[in-house]
Image (tube, rainbow, N blue to C red; front, side):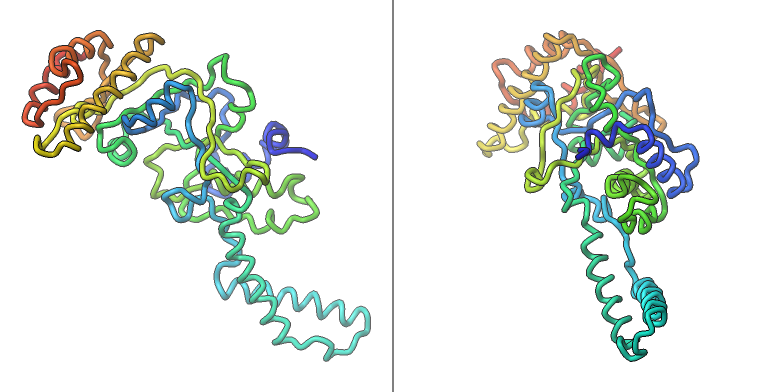
Length: 354
């Protein structure tokens, strides 16, 4: 029996899904790329995310746990009008069978049959709406852009986090992982895949369930278009469906971009609040782990800066040594500082950018 890993590498299957998404979203330019562009992961500068980065993995999350209610949902006879229409069509087929076999006309009552079929479609609609969650569908979410003001605000802790750059064309990335990476297609309405869901005899597609999953997992509302999202999509065996997240190995980052306000969490507001001061001190220690990692692995660092006179962001480079130098001057022995010194310290590091 073929697994998802086998199916996702099949050229005919990939072509079918690619064309189905392009047609379903009215985007003739949509395609699965053979050469994957640099992709970015917006994250906080937390102990957990930095440990994950150092250990070389990201988490794939169950699609049912994503923040978008419609993410990964299959729309199948959602309205009463659609359900009644399908039920009446079923009745016409049943009536033809009754006539063909010369059965009594009153064998099945019209209203009773249509009502029963309509209710069945309602139940199936609810089940299929969350089908991807039942099937154990997981995704790692990445972005094509590193300078999205909304992404920095929403996913990088209000510009205090980081954006990690990955090159999945790296020779150390296995072919299967690359073939699980796809661009998201945005549209004003969900792709209609009712025919695929009902394709029990595989007349439309040999792997109609997997095709339905990919079409759904790679389609989002145009509201989210600013994310320029790419996804690494997986369907796990049944024994893994209870997991909320799973680890996925990544190539070594090719660059780490720090948010404009990455220094802010290292400062405290209220000296009397011991917890706040301790958190600031711990964040400094965590960040120094990241600096050491970038230094050892020769990973370049940039800082995302605002362009004065425009609503745009631009990354500017800085050496690890210069950041170390600033930390030795202003955060000796993991010392924390009052927030009133923040802008002074930030201006110092902005002067170090190239």
